[in-house]
Image (cartoon, rainbow, N blue to C red; front, side, top):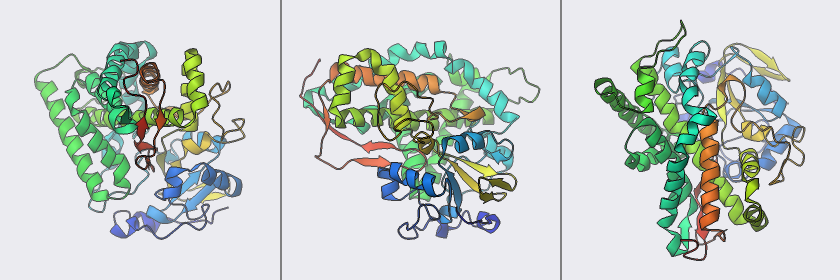
Length: 429
């Protein structure tokens, strides 16, 4: 079991440039893990197994220090530890060296409801739920399907594409732009901002901070426009929403935070899931042929894509000292909510490290657990199912090619960022 660590002093160093130093190769994943390690990003499954077997709540001093639970039951239990664990700092990486210090209120509204603790969490989440209910998201089915066809039209004749850049990462930003009522042409800019906030920001904190500021400035201007000239879109609906809760205080700043969540979390997580599914089908032809022969399996297969390639790790901050399964967590310590590792726990999933396309029992936590479970899961599933179905209808024969190296992003969100695909040109045009 990892040793006890008192991180009070480390919290004062959170903005020091020294925290971002790599610190050499990992020698013991239970006491010195590094979420930026290339091996961890490309294939974390065996590393999680080692952690789970040797020290289910691992620890590291890197990046300011953190704890890393890997068992399904532990992750779910910690997700319910409220108010002991706060969600006000959900990023797995420390702040950029020159990041401004935020008050607790500013931290909570930054991407509410995911960054909010009760009672703010309750009323900000209720603001979002109607727009993401199962029936509500069906209104985006036709738009998403048309978008998928349009994207494929652009490269199907060439017999090759980058399945990440040209397809999977193009879908969620356009759907989100359509949903909140901004120009879908912002998709490329959204991708750049989100990539720096959650992806490349693993290594370049200054660019992460600049991207965050630019994104918030953009949202703030859009909110101001809606105040002056309301539109028929979700952004306007949120801005003028009346919430039946005495704690509710719907301000423009709160709406900026909620919209920030929709753009950042609603884009990267879903494009990573779509990309991982396409990578799998382009790498394992038996599963691809199975879906072609039994298209009715797609919803079940999507759940297995979500479980096996669960993309998201979130963070919590301890509000008090906690003794948890032998880990002595101190007030101010960071805990990584390792939902992907939990999805590979053999205590809950038979043959967890095997992809089983028709897995019957699959109560995964790819969308999180507890009160902060992803509010947009219904839209994410719709986008995934639609993107995979349309791809298979248009391009039934394809493979991940070796004309250039694959590139995976990791840390906060894991998924393909460069994914060369090859296929017979002109299929099902």
